[in-house]
Image (cartoon, rainbow, N blue to C red; front, top):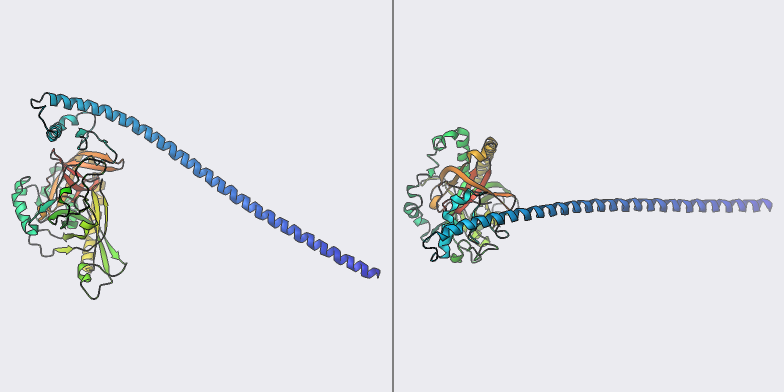
Length: 438
């Protein structure tokens, strides 16, 4: 019996020991779990603190920027007051000052352009107020003149008559046909084969843009201004409007079957198709309604060009109204066309990068520029000249004015400012200078 009792006691002790060990293990496991949770919470708190510190830094920086902008604005207001005093003095000396209508007052201010340029900074005439100011209202486009679209009530058949009747550039001697353009047409100090090759490469990608509908959704005024928006009075019109643009990319499109004009009228659509992206001015193609009524003409280099191609199937459309730029995405299943444009783009970007690097150091001294366009909707021409003023728009984009020859039909044409990049031609100011997109 004693031995049996002893055995039972040992078994009980063993069970108690195992139970205690199991309990200790559970406690240890919970402690480890608690420790992990605690470390995780600590890490999260540390991350939150770091993010808060970053936000505080950003807010502090923004506060400094706001303060600096306020000081800058105050200086501009003082400069504006000085300039308005000059304008008022000029108007007071005019014998017809009391009978001048508001538009003539604006024209008088335009005539004082060169005088006002000598004051403090280069600024532009803001037609929102008719005053000289860089920042008059929030998001004001500032440089707003006259668009240079060719409007043709008679359609394509009247375009050559518009060219012949042109009063802005009679004879178009400063518009050089692409097939006769040579190194000798460049400014004397810049007559080299690399620049010539770059201009020809840009010309290869230039397209004529034709729009057959003016959207009923065009606004009456520019955003946040009382400036009449381009062609607001032509809403719903189906008169032909022409401008220019440039191919900026081509790539194979893998989303569904081709939607080009040919495939849309075929029982079997091609699976292989490409997107061709074209850049132009938003004043030329305002929205998706106008985009659906737009076609482009490629390789229209001479009046008797035999390899002209037209595309009309717009798959996508993007715009920025204040900057006055837009992008049209056309689709095609023409493999040869896609390959040709792809090769032209590769050659263009090689030339573009070389020219940008070469002129970067002297870009604001030489001020060399050129554009390739379809004036009056006719064959492609090249114009070379110099830009005049550069202004920062929205703190990150530049806008330019220039004296190079432009005509109706040039809106949307790519304008190349050597060393400063490229923009789209938008229109012309009252003073006669052309101006670009931002």
